[in-house]
Image 1 (cartoon, one colour):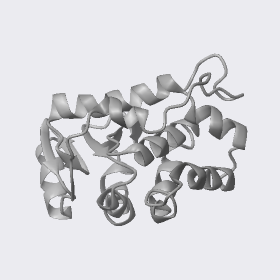
Image 2 (tube, one colour):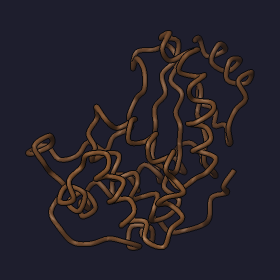
Image 3 (tube, one colour):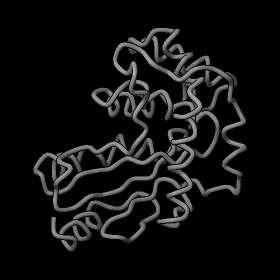
Length: 204
């Protein structure tokens, strides 16, 4: 589990901030990018599991590769629970990755999220995370111009940083991944048994 370092939120933004217009294309023109939390499953499910994660966090990637498929099959696809993903970037590469996922659009958001977690070693821990993210984005079908516009979207950047602030202030998130179920914050990757007990206790 990656422990949260004491880093000013503004510093994360300044790591790579660049001036420019907001990221808009045919899918988002006139509306901007929706940086709100994204929900996997039925938003009206009896239980909502909130996940705070950083795209540069190996343990977060492990959850998405190993535990999430079971959670989807057992609870999300059956309508007993929904997963609400909230950004908690630990560093500049994670912030850029989060921006890219949002710029992919709501219909492709979770596909990009899983893609970026799977490809994490190819961009998050490299000397040129932005350049390598651009290569991956173009492999996934995004144009280079759209990628650059996305990275220049200051309102999107600020919204993602704000998600991290809310996690700290409202849910006392101290590490990634962290999950909130029925008002209780659980650090690390819960076991299947723990998730079953918590979801059922919450009414799922």
